[in-house]
Length: 158
Image (cartoon, rainbow, N blue to C red; front, side, top):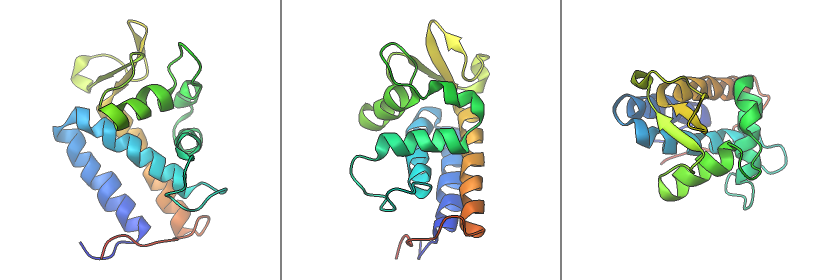
């Protein structure tokens, strides 16, 4: 593997490798994309530059959604009782027990259900559409690293 810059890590791991998973393992892709969203949020976190900082997960995930994803996602940031908050119902669920909360349904394009629509009062996420928006978010962070608006603060691998 060798030493990767953050730009190479985002390009090769978050974009290319997760893209391969989306093509073959739709369900698993949600777990990886949610972890990747939190990584991206950590890169734009101005308060705490340490990616391993405790207690920053929710802020970083939500900041990535608000700053790097299309506006259509923004309404799903709130995590109050009964809503469709992406952090609590998606990220926490899939990252902790590999299942989303009851307010979220995961699917794929061939289901003919629209991404970010409601189905049986559940927010539907379509793997391929979610990945497409994640990929754009990744490319935005790469641009920020390249133009110096955020710094390469560490290298990955050996």
